[in-house]
Amino acid sequence: MNEFDTHEIPPLSEEEAHGLIAALAESESLDLPVPCRERILDLLGANWPILIQLFISEIQEAELGGPPTLENLDRIYHEGLVHGSRNQYCEGMYDRVKEIFSASEARLARAILRSLCSHCEGFTRAEMEAIHAQVEPNAEVRTTLADEFDHVLDTLKHDGYLLQRTGGEQRTAFASNILFDYWCRKAS
Image (tube, rainbow, N blue to C red):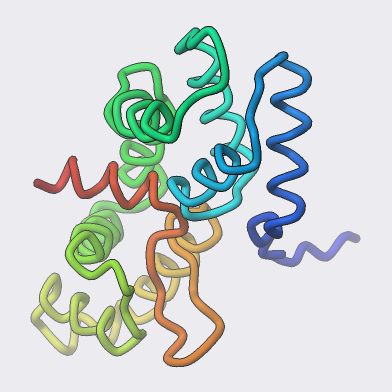
């Protein structure tokens, strides 16, 4: 019999992310000097391989005719990745909340994600529990739903929506800038 454990896979290190960008750029014959690679990583805010691959695809589709400028990268990020209709990643992550959670769990997940849009520094567990109290004001019901609260947080972390910082207050925030920016746009 197999025992299945959950393993958190962290984002790539800076060195690994630069290596992935360089390899993808080379395979697509894109000229991406180091300042461009650094800007890509700054814009994404997290070194997840899928996000790096999406960004490289958008650069490729832009057909710039040479190395992108930093301004080109900013425009591609905002117009192509955050607001673009072809970016199914963000839309899929937005819609996924209602697919993976029960109705009450989805309400809580959306409330946490919407609240994080105005708190980019993230929330402590106590602050997220306060959001839970707003979503479900009845303390007795909240107590019976304690497992639901933990399930929502664990799933949001496991699925790549949220990342808990390891230092200081261990605040939990969006796992990437692209999801943060996308949810802020959808929540406004």
